[in-house]
Length: 191
Image (cartoon, rainbow, N blue to C red; front, side, top):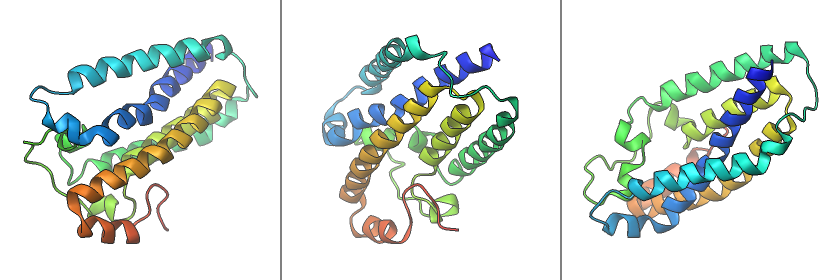
């Protein structure tokens, strides 16, 4: 159980910094596109520093649990499965370059197209929904207070990041994206 709790804490540390990573990208996408060299050589080390910082900040509380109930892993496993299902469908009709954010940071990238089919016909940001499912699974399964706090942090920063990403996508795709955004929810799909 201790191994799973440590793994859950580390996973939530990494997941919680994903919106911060993209907050470095989206407000400055036009600047990153002007660079000749890949901005990931700066962005990825900065992201790793975020992991270390968030890990150091939350580390002292990584053992504090709201509960320790083994059966909570049952719904957690279901959430993990949902997250993996969403990830697998998020990759359909979407290239690895798009998943990695290359069109956001490279002006010369050819795979810059708006994808509105598949799972993206139901939710605009399925990868973030997958991240949320994984973080909720770790929070529920481990019962760790720090996982719950990191999940809440990711939700707040993710909401800001999604607004910035939507604005950046609107600049790139114009009216086509505005129509798409008006009919498809950001993260929580309509049933």
